[in-house]
Length: 114
Length: 111
Image (cartoon, rainbow over all chains, first blue to last red; front, side):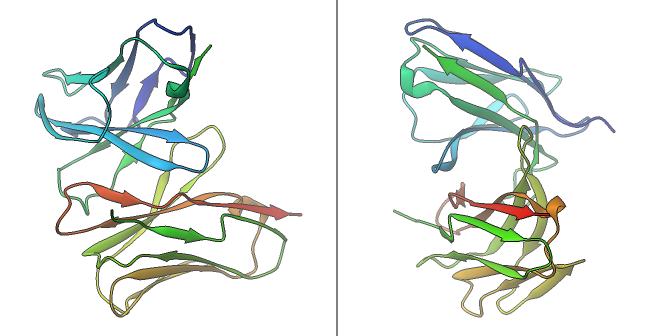
């Protein structure tokens, strides 16, 4: 069974640009969550999608948005990039939306904003 | 603000030594998960604990959930270089839909 796939693995952008990250969940998983990881900050929750609907959103500005397609694949978009957006962006899929459900993470997209 | 504090933040020890990593909060958790993240990869779930006082073992790793479900520990016996990684705990709180994540413990086991 293929794991969670995130593309691209690395991305370098300049301030003011926008970026789109992609996540393909494990087959059969309908829940996809996005996290931002920076050194010493742990994982910061961005949002969760289930069956194409955003179920929950973290405390990030509106520049961060996402969507989920009918095949459960998800994309995350960040507009007007800032230097502080440099981070590892992780996508996780789960078979359900319960908080105790195991999260299966991809290997992330490393975004560097210069 | 609900916080989950992990300690130590960084630990570097020799192969064969024992160690304990802690995850503490003032909040009561309905469940708590431990993940390990290796460089260049995403976190991988190690265990989920749900009952106060619960102890789970995974080979040389022993996980314990506090009786009051406010804290948890991870004990590694005879650490090996393959145990190297970032250990993260994440707790589920009834009043919060999201998981609460600790900042992680970076563990290095030197051969």
